[in-house]
Image (cartoon, rainbow, N blue to C red; front, side):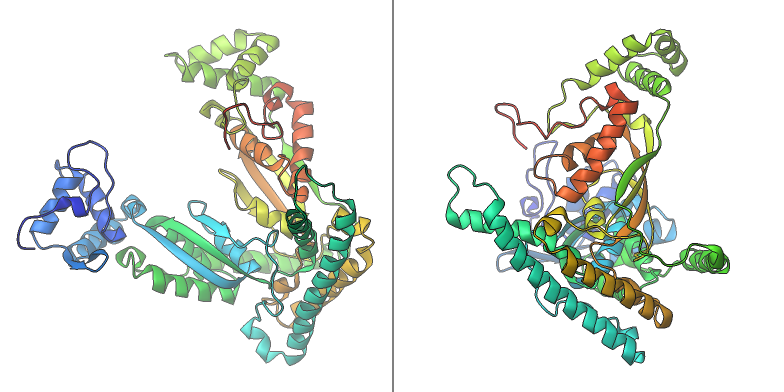
Length: 505
């Protein structure tokens, strides 16, 4: 590059210790950040050197600066990221991806592929799906009879959705209380959105959705590997399309993305072992059991109090672990409870507890509707999930307002048709059967969470604005936590109360 380098095109200031970097490709920004571990120069100085050495191709363009990654950036990433496995470098490169018209099944697989990605997804709670917006697995083309059953289910699901929606709107219009000062238009919108929330339970996992996604290079690479190793062809195709588009922004960081033999071979082996023993497992059934949420494992209360006290003492002193443990064990139960109450009582509805509470670990079991599961897999912060495959074997949820409106019969008929279609298609095309599962069907989920994460989930999911299904699950968990760990649970639910004066969400 000839002439004077104007760094103000690329950094927000030239004379302060904190600044942002922009107008450069994400992969180049990652290189600049990575240089700091090998160079005494500042980020700004490294950028200036690259520009002066003509290592970056930069040109003025209408509306701003257009630039693209250099061969030097590519060589750097080849050496340190691809060659030596320094994957942390890739975390400084970020891509934003729009993904449209994928199934709800695929969106869940994508959102579970890596916890470092961020998502915003089309909400069936607030928007009305369109007829015909469902995914048809290409593998069904070889099974015309199964494809016909599949298509019939998807159309019937939408027919039932429309019937439920109409019935719920009439029912709710007569029963929902008006808010003070609420206009007729706003009331109608609220009634309609409430009806959307419950009618959607008959829609299947084939229903199309859209989402926006943001991820760093390392997380995106790991995401693509997971998707390429998926049991679902739709997910594998999605991975290749994502790889193509992300490669336009951070090309080097996605080199050598391949399916994982470990994931695929291990899954095949475990599934084979399971099939060999399945003859003795329970037969297909339609259990009437309700959804459930419970603790599989809670720490002993006395031990939990002691561990929390130890962590709080270490966090707020210069004590060694042995000294903190000795002091904590010398406290009576009431003294430990007072210490923990002191550490939690100032929490406001938008606060997180101190990091010390991340050392208390709980194990959960959830048997919840697909609608509930799709909410839970988003908006959690640090939950570690193990989830079962989509199935019709574990029963289903009928929304209470569906029952109250006298619409349980058409609802159940559709769910039962989905169950029967799932069974028939599973026999001839197993990969397509999960798309017949409805939002009402239950999925088996286990989760490991810390008390810190429980505070986040309970606070968020028991608030008045939370959807009724997930609110019920976390109210059950909160009730059980209060019984067994009363002081530790005392301030978990805070959003249920009005925010303090001057506060904000």
